[in-house]
Length: 209
Length: 199
Image (tube, rainbow over all chains, first blue to last red; front, side, top):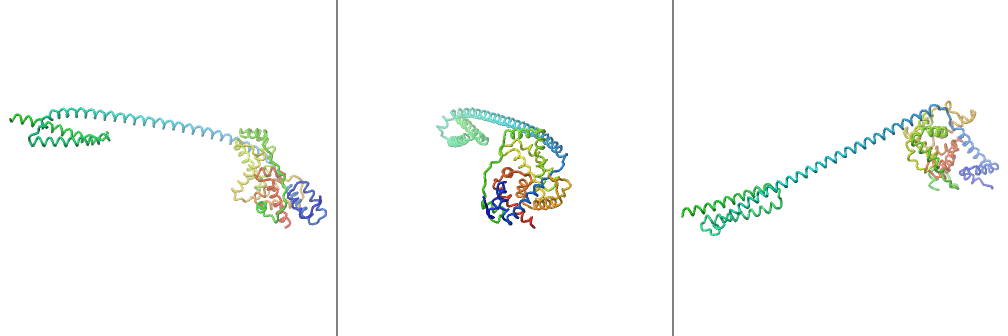
């Protein structure tokens, strides 16, 4: 196979022995290519002489020590990571237990509040039942109200009943509102006092007659 | 082709025929070697050093320009091999992987000192592989100086092929480039060196 000068670069690029052999054969008959090829080979020959060797008896012991040190530090690191994970798990468990206890306390408190409100409501019911009983006693007199004072008591009682009903509706919406409960109690007390006045007025009226 | 040509600033395109040769692949031995390295087996490291230490030193020397840094790079490479051996996945042969770590370690060291090769007189410390005349010494010094001025990839391809005698397939595996690219870089580097050589 023969080549021309333009193909020399292709052969040098390929660089394998057969390509270089072909280039050398062409260079025999071409002075310019011979010069190029000589320069090319000179670089390769010089480069081969650059392979560096030197005695370094201490290098391997140094490397061996470094690897052993690395192994030790790796082991230490593994233990450190394991300890950190353990600590993290312990902290997590503690936090979880504390949170659970806090929730339990909150739950107990909620139960206590609910039972206290139940007690208040039961007392209120008994109180209301007693007042209703008083109202029953006074109702006969109120129905036959003949004096202006009795009429005014009747109107006052009607107003108190309306206010009590309104307050009770508000309490049904918010059982824990202590202020509303106080207001309700005040109104019932006023109703009780009024009913007593009605009964007393009636007995006074009877005794005067 | 154009992209490659522009990357290496060739004066004119040439016909490139590439016979694809897959880089050496992992064998069972490589896997065993990697496992032993991960376990820190001293004997295995000793055998790797015995088989590849000289070449590793020479490669590092041509990257870093002095004996002390070259030895540091070799030592650091062995430590990195120990650390990374567990993640060796066999994409490349163990030796390719080893040299890749070495080259990257050298690049890192060069970057740490701002990519400047620290030249120290070394001829009294190192010996060439054969008896050399004074003329050869001059040529070698001149070539070494030209190499130190090359960009790192060009210098690496040239050194691995021309000085250390690695194949283009091996170089491609080490530098994570194609075999054709390795040939091209070598060709254009030698062209460049030839121009400077004449001066």
